[in-house]
Image (cartoon, rainbow, N blue to C red; front, side):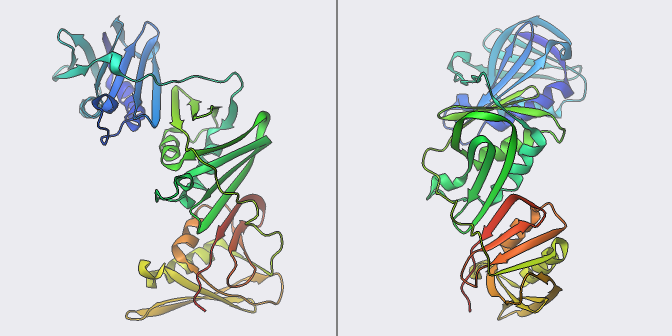
Length: 373
């Protein structure tokens, strides 16, 4: 294998595939990147067996292809070498003794190669009719749900996001059993078979870093044990989480005792300031109490002090509410609301708090209260 390429072109694609390797792997081959050079261009591949990433550099973006071939080298070392080279031409050549020779005008590196035959088959297959989705929309889905997934391993299904598709409706759900976020969107085309899968949140967070802010589409290919995302010149595979996701459909009530509307920025800033006098050992607890169209938000650390914030709100009836909740959970929820106003819906101090955008039903969030009164 021998070719010449600009440093900035190669590092752009190495930035993609480096996300597919993990230094925690005991199998050295899974810490490597595979280079596959053909007459059409260069494929770069990586995998840690949970995710796999493949990217393609077209021949028009490569200065010179002399000898096609394939090599497998340490991912971290090739990445750091290319990253720190100046923005000029880089020559890469496989030389005798299974070594990769990397040269520029003033630098020369030699890296040992691994056996290319040991590199896993990435299983990157495609459906005839994939789901087509805008990249920006997909990023929004993940940003508005991922924060609510569990980080503990005691219930693996809760460490992922549940994707359900029926007809043209896709519902994405995340919960750690203390809070819940449900995002619903309408697809451009109907999906023939119903879908109900759980994708690991950590893998989706890596995928989001690869997506653009443009209005470009992506393809989603769903299989029994994996899902493949294809966009731009990148293909990413992620394994699915086995198990049954809890039924959250009955957790959101249809009727509420009290609804409160408030300007989102005002409420966020009040919660943010009140959170200064909370601590993790007390679950970051703050209290909310209404009195007419005034809401008082308070918190205290006995040995430090206390805080009270007062804001004006709009209520849908004369009932009052007195409730406590985690300021951290509330702030996480408020950060992803894309609206000027927000709505808080209550059914008493011991029932879940529902958070919504009053102008749209596509995002619904839930937080369990904390018993203090």
